[in-house]
Length: 224
Image (cartoon, rainbow, N blue to C red):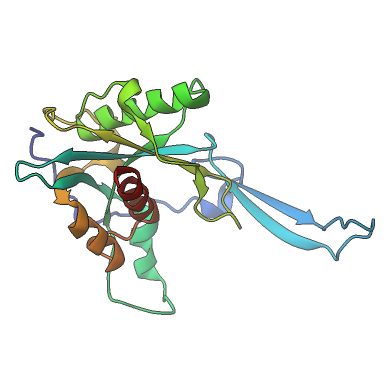
């Protein structure tokens, strides 16, 4: 079983690099474009501005790990992660405030597809690697189940698509989570949650992660 992680209580901004950073460096790249629409009759629209956010690695994979519990019900694994962008919402004023602060967010295992990951074989390989790195489960690529087509999270601004996968780890032992050594993985923990409870957690905002809810619904359909 995983060891006891450190407890993170806040994220401190040591330096804000925004004013002196290029928009095409860092973990996210922002392209600022001036565009116009080309129409079927040969005419064009007025010009308008578009910002496009790219990652250095274009797409990601998310893996729903599930198992049959001792009582015969279906459970799924949730992982708690530090999420700086969600945390820094606390400095802003949302239109519908709910008083919540999101230092950590619970979601399913996920990671970026690497340059060497090609086709469905590459997708399955990366899903298996993330299951080990973020959850401590050894899963064979052949046991990864692809849950339908990939989807956009915010297609108006973000080019990334997420590929949803699942793996049944019933009977497998969980090792200590290797992680990648990043400070962003400090405090990460996993837990098993009954399937229906996890759906309720998504819908009441306690698991405020769209890919997790969509993966749950797709797996529910796949399992009948």
